[in-house]
Image 1 (cartoon, one colour):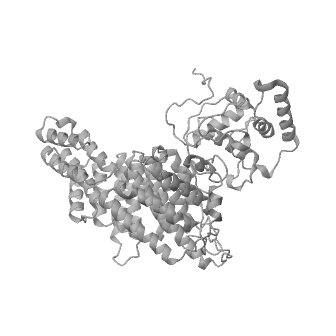
Image 2 (cartoon, rainbow, N blue to C red):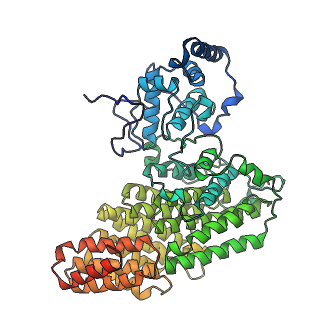
Image 3 (cartoon, rainbow, N blue to C red):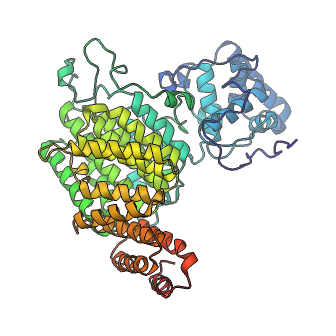
Length: 592
């Protein structure tokens, strides 16, 4: 039987299902075989609101006395010792809870009672473990703890930027820290890895949550009249705000316990530590003269979004991404920290959410997938503050598209369904169509023909009910007949149905405007792949060669990935002159 590692550092045995709990192990079982019932962590007061009393105080004194009497070889962390005593944990029980909480977040941790002994003697656990230990005590004792509260150092958090903030201003702190650190050519954030486990909690928090009651920063009293609230911000008369949201799919409630990603410390300090923000930097910003935000500012942000969208579509995410992030830091952050009433505040959060999603999209296009994921999560939180469920659904659809690109089909399907469920019938038909298209792509990725076809039919029907006069947000206007054919071409390619893939790719290219240069490259590569699947190697290589030349004008890692995928598919045909010519051209272009 394999033994647990002797070292305190957890051994990684590969990526586990983040929702899996070993058979026969009840979640959060107590030392006495009972199951803990934990209230939501956002209801807990801070730890320092309850100084240790009674047994806890005695435990602190005992731990401190033991340290004085026996020296460094005994307890060097009296805070942790006191909390273990107060919670009634054995060392093995604490280790087991940390392991189980790690599983909820996709981490395969193998701690045991020896690990806890080392923590008590002063050894610092690595990675996200301090935050997980603090979360265990938060749940057990009913008050909030940070890593520092339990005598541990908050190391660079694995989940920095994936927090779904409790308040609008906490969300501003988190995303503003990301903007600041993302400025510059050598940003550390661009090397953060994508984590599928980080998708579940934010999407569910958005789905079951309700719009923040207040975002204004002008000292006004929020209106009690539901009619004055933005769309999606509250309940129907006589119905609670949570119950007024669409029903939650049963599978979302059973796949994993509803928990928050543990923060390393209160507020955004964990991310600030990663992002390089100095202590007190946020407070210093708050003390600056507040900018009064008006409708013209909102219009300017939206116009900037349209500009950067056009640049991204024509030249790739790498061309304008850095300028977009600088704009968010220098212009959007002062507005978010400025003065505004409820109506302007909601519109401001919505406009900045759209720009933050676009920052994530352009990061996705340069293959900074972990950074893109974090921008998407923060855009989702900002959209909730805006009271804009349709925009939130669009953010989730974007996250689904990234998951498809990275091969995470299950997560892609779930995100698309959460978007549909959260938006309901409130979305314009065009927006509903793009959500169904995202789900279809996820099903195609795993070869589920039936489910893919069902989603494609729904997509086509939804777009068929759209009318030219529909009031569409600017971010949804790209989804037209050309985009529909493009999505279908990708689905048929992944299902290896080459003829319909080619037919839909050809249709998309006929309808697609030249301004969508990157999308045209993608679609040409789908057409080339379909031709190759049909056995027409010469035609396939000719189409791919056109895309290769057009890609020279792009700063898009995804464009390169399409070309490399085609090159891999050419392997059985390398004896062909056309295949050899494409390979040589791709090598000279630096693609392979």
